[in-house]
Amino acid sequence: MLKLLVFTILVTQSPAEKSLSIGRYQIPGMSEVVHEDLGQRLPPWSGIPFAGLLLSIAILPLVAPEFWHRNYPVVSLVWALILAVPFVIAYKGAAIHEILHTYLNEYIPFIILLSALYIVAGGIYLKGTIIGTPKVNVAFLGVGTILASIIGTTGAAMVVLRPFLRANMYRKNRTFMVAFFIFLVANIGGALTPLGDPPLFLGFLHGVPFFWTLKLIPEFLLTAGLLLLIYYFLDRRHFVREEFDFTRVKREPLRLEGWYNIFGMAGILLFVLLSGVVDLGEVEILGVRAGVHDIVRDVGLIVIAAVSYIITPRIVHEENEFTWEPIKEVAYLFAGIFMTMIPVLAILRAGEHGSAAFIIRFVEKPADFFWVTGGLTSFLDNAPTYLTFLNTAIGKFYPGVHTAAGVKALLLDHELYLKAISMGAVFFGSMTYIGNAPNFMVRSIAEKSGTPMPGFFGYIFKYSLVFLLPVFILVSVIFF
Picture (cartoon, rainbow, N blue to C red):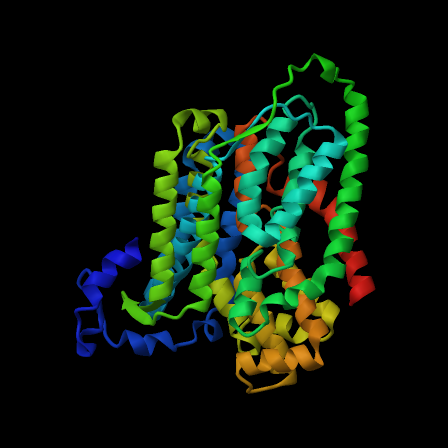
């Protein structure tokens, strides 16, 4: 909505009035600032606030849980200011432009999309009795994994998670179930279409054919198949040990309440897809160029979410245990993450001209691209990481060639590199809670529903390193 409000002011300005005013501070010639490459000048220690925020997310819930749950918005804000204040003092207009660009073109659309999916999915309630046996749970995960490539990882996670949690409310050991849900539904399932995960959608916008990602089916089937098999045997072991008498559970027939919200999900998908294929021109907002089609998309999503919330009966939200806390937690924490991530991503974008040049020079073979793209995706936003290494691969084989032309050439001559980058960006989002947008929300919803979840490092050391890493090594050996 911020884009829409400012748009009405800026469209009345003449070209000569395009300098930016923030309070009494004038930034003349903002269009000149846009082209300044901060990544070439930023020192590596500018990533310290990002590391500090990640460590806070990892450690404070363990050592000071009450303080964290009361003050996590403040912690996020403090780390954001630790980066923003010296950043603006040192780089002035260029820094302000980067911050505005990040929040107007990335953070606000990110939160609008997540909120819309969260609200609309929160109005869909599968009522009735489902018993979470190992076979039923594998079916839940399998359907969610396939659904993720159709309605996106976030959409699939929000639709499937609550019924999955209710089906297992009788089970004692549920933490591992949510971990595998994050692996499969919130990440790996989005590998087959550009609608599945943001990096693949960016690839589509830069010239990768829409159905090219179906070539990832062998890698997808191996990865998802192995994880589902591991999950089944793990779940069966716990199921047998629990010895719960499910015959005592009162059975109720299944029925879908709030079914009309399915049309809301379809509307969200349509707006997202159209924003990528329809060009309605650009406007300047606070000196930042934004697509009119993106503004239309964001307004459309807000309208869909508002209508869904208004028309969904309160009883459906209550039965679904709908609360605002999970989306608030994501909004506050990612506001800080997006701010502190600015110098890290800028350094990566600078390639061999930035302080992360040693990383760019390291990648040579497809396996290198798979692991480096994946490793960075685990802690950074997977969309810019994907673009960084897509352009790195193009620059490696076709120096000076425009991205769109480079993509075509890459598909003809070095397709394996694009596969490695795509899989690294999608699969490795499951390695940490912040690796992909829905991960943190899934964790928060699970905790609010009574499922104990490990902390940041607990998730990594107990689950992703134990179950994901061996599968990724196998995928790397077989395919790259």
